[in-house]
Image 1 (cartoon, rainbow, N blue to C red):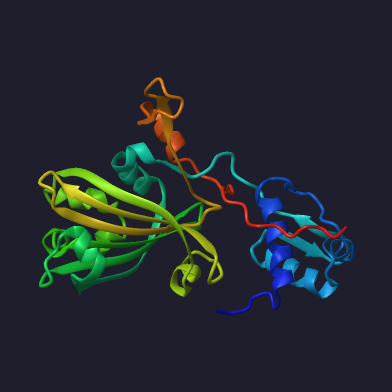
Image 2: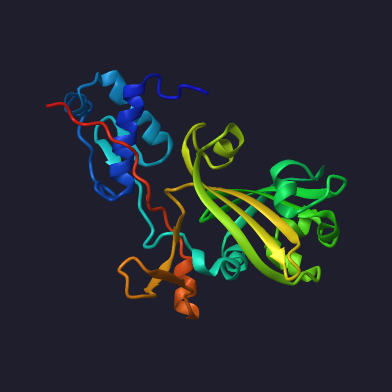
Length: 280
């Protein structure tokens, strides 16, 4: 892993300042303190502060000018890119239509390991494997690796996969989608995902693994998705389902307004990194 800031303290200062910018605590157009002031505030050297500011400038969060100082140029959009967990399948195709996708790879691989087990695919079966990056407003937010049984994937081309939602193509092949099972966790970005999402190796990501089944219970798609937490979040609406205070059940959003809310765009930080306390 490349030590992109040179030292741990520089990375900590970077994380603190980045969090303040992305959370809106320091808004668009605001001027940051001088290097000397930041060095004194966090108890580090000017060189350390300069490294942190250099990384923020590389990410186009700030602008540094010798005569004018350091100014925040990050401007958040009005609402977050979110997905309603309770409406999983309904949201998949809609998100595919509202965002741009870049196909990085398209090939066939033998069914093996956890993917084959999740799909219930025999060892002698081939799976179509694709890697895509999905973006909104030109900014990448997800790194998607999918596996689809060969019998389904032969009905669509590489070009179609690069331009149409995968779920649409699967249903066009005559598959009647029945249900899906998914797991959400957190991981650190590997080199490939980090490069595709414009992050550093080791950056925190939201991980989602989803398996889609047809009405007969056969696995038709395995998705491994990695999301930037500052550009994507999951939401769920709940309703009281019993007398106990802890009894809640998910509800699916209805109507165009709710659907639009599910797929609106922005860059909002949902998971805040650990900060560096100012020196006293």
